[in-house]
Amino acid sequence: MLAVVTQSPGVMVVDEVPEPGPPGPQDVIIRPEVVGICGSDIHVYSGDIGALSGASNFFPRVQGHEFSAVVEQTGKDCPGGVKAGDRVAVWPLHGCGRCYPCRVGRANACVALELVGIHTDGGLQQLLSVPASQVFTAGDLDAESAAFVEPMSIAVHALDRADIRAGQQAVILGAGPIGLATLMAATAAGARVMTTDPVAARRDLAVAVGAENVAWGSDDELLDEVRKWTRRKGPPRVIDTTGDPAALALATAMVCSAGRVVVVGMSAVAAPLRSGVFPEKEIDVVGSSCQTAGDFRTAVRLVRSHREAIATLFSHRFPLTQARAAIECVASSQPDVVKVLITLGS
Image (cartoon, rainbow, N blue to C red):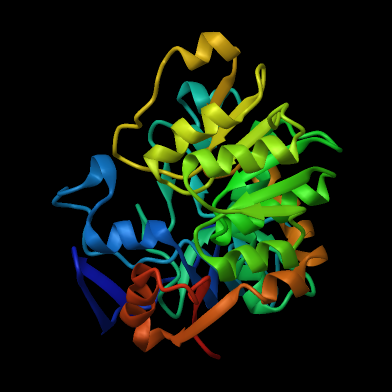
């Protein structure tokens, strides 16, 4: 069968690989349909993957961690809710089950976390085997919408970390796919949202999918816009989806006293922060990593209710054999690039 294999940093080839054997008792064999490409895929492709950078055993890797698939076979002890022919969204996360985060129900922060498509082979191949516990039936969702469940689940988890309440004002920094998903999840929870992004087309998309206000400019200009929007009180919640370390300093300046900042975007660069802002404003700054199984289940419902809006985010599509071009399309950061999909066909 065909697979796209990242052999080493920056080296990606289409190759023939063996098909998976019969599924284990609690595993399923699935046929990927659509794979979404995001910033994490760029980091893996380039070898810029934090603690795993330069690890001799990381490559080769079949990437793809946000994808839809059809179940081909089920193991003999799989739960009855999953059967051959079902379209599923794949929850890519697997925790060790033993560390402190796993024991308290937060496997998304597992110290030995494994993600399909990053730590183990993922969706850029024609068949693969995964535990049945990591597939969620997508019902009547089309393949492209089902592939967006994983990004939406990241948004759901960020909203849980934010403890958003109906009627609250929230600023979301960034209108990429995760920022826009977070916007949809926040408005579904009853929040009033302002979105910031340097790309005008993305700000337009934010308005189209529910933002009450959008803005861009220098930090001082953005702070001024936020003060006007909140009647000089500052928003109780700021969610950073950008991965820009400078955005954290902006977020802490922007949020109101006793408010909360949620950091979703990742960066290995130190943030230029003034530590005095924490005791002065008594703000909470929390991280948000991946998602839980409960978040993933909620995301399936949110994607179903927002599928028309989500479809407007799909800007580019590539076949499996052009996976490298899809990765480069995302890396280009062109203003017309929003969500890039790789379709595997029948």
